[in-house]
Amino acid sequence: LECLGHVKTVVFDKTGTLTTGRFSLSHLEAVGGSKSRKEILRLLAIMEAPSSHPLSACLVSAAKDEGVVLSETVCALQHTILKGEGVTATVDDERVYVGNARLFRRIGMYNIPQQYTDWATEWSDEGGTVGYIGIEGVGIIGMYCVKDTIREEAPSVVSTLHQSDVEVIMLTGDGHGAARAVGTQIGLDESCIQSQLLPEDKLHYVSSLKGSSTDRHPSLYGGKKLILMVGDGVNDAPALTVADIGVAMGEGAALAVEMSDVILMDSNLTKLLFSMNIGAKVIATVKENIAFSIVVNLIAIVLTCFGKMTLLWAIVSDVGTMLLVTLNGMKLLSPRTIAAIERKQDGMLAVRTERKKDGERYENLNEVGSGDLELV
Image (cartoon, rainbow, N blue to C red; front, side):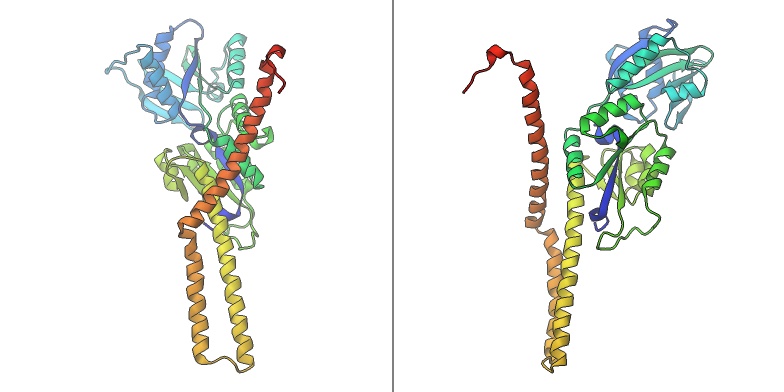
C-alpha cells in the first residue's frame, strides 16, 4: 500500500487491459486465390483452437458463425506459440503459420502485392490488429483484421492519472497504426506509446524506467518514483515481475495473476485509482502517527526535565500514544474513509466525463443546420 502511494509512472498493456480483449473479425481477404474464404477460416480455426489468446477465440468464433465445421480427424500437430509473433503447426501435412507481419518477414514469406499492403495499413490505421496466414512453400494465402473495443473507463482513468501528475505509458505488440488509434481514443500522446514489442522488449523497457535503486520500500517523503505495470496476459508476466508494483486484471492469464502484487478482481481500471488513493492515504496516516508520537514524547521529556512527570503518567503517555496511533491507523478500514476516497475519485472522473460531453455538444453543432438554430 505504501508503494502504491508513491507511484509516478503507470505502464499499461493494451490488449485486455486498456481494451476489453473481446475481438470481432472486421476483414478477411484471400491472397493469391489458392484458397477460398471458407478454407482460410477453416485453417485459422484449426490453428487457433488450442490457443487461449482472446484473438484466437475471435477467429474460431468467426469460423463457426460462417458455418465452418471442423472435422475431429483434422488437428494441428506440433502446435507452437511464437512469442510476440503468432503460432505455427502442421495441418494436413503442410506447415502453416498464423501471425503478424513481423513473423512473415522473419521467415521470408512477406511478399504480397502492394494492394494487400495498402489494405493492411488502412486497417491498422482504423485501430484494427492485422494478421496473416501462410503455408510453407506456398506463401501468404490470406489476411485478416480483428478489432477490439476500448474499456469504457479507460479514457477517464488515464485523464485522472494525468491530473495527478502521473506519467502514463502504453505498451503493445501490435503495429504502430493500431497502437496510435487506441492511444488517441484514451488521450495518450504518441511519445507515450510503444508498439511492436516482444515480451522481452516489454521487460527491458520497464527495467529501463526503474531507478538505479532496487529497494522496493521508498521513504515516506517520496524519495523514489515507483513504476507500476498493469497487464493481463502471459506476455506481460515478465514485465509485471520486474516492475516495482505489478497489477494484473482478474480476467487475465493465470501466470500474470501469479506474478502480480495486486489483482483487480473485476478487471475495472477505476479500482486501480482507488488502490493508489488508498496508498496515498496510508502514507498520510503514517506521517500523522509519527508526528503525534514525536510531539507526545517531546512533551514527556520537557515535563521530566522540570520534575513534573511521574512514573504513572509516563506509562499512561506511552500506552495512550500506542492506542491512539493504532486507532488512527484503523480508520483506514472505516466505511467513512473508504467512501470519502471513492467520492474524491468519482469527482475527478465526473469532471473528465463532463468535459467529454461538452466537447461532444460542441462537435454536434457542426451537424445542425442554420435553419435549426433558435435564439432563446
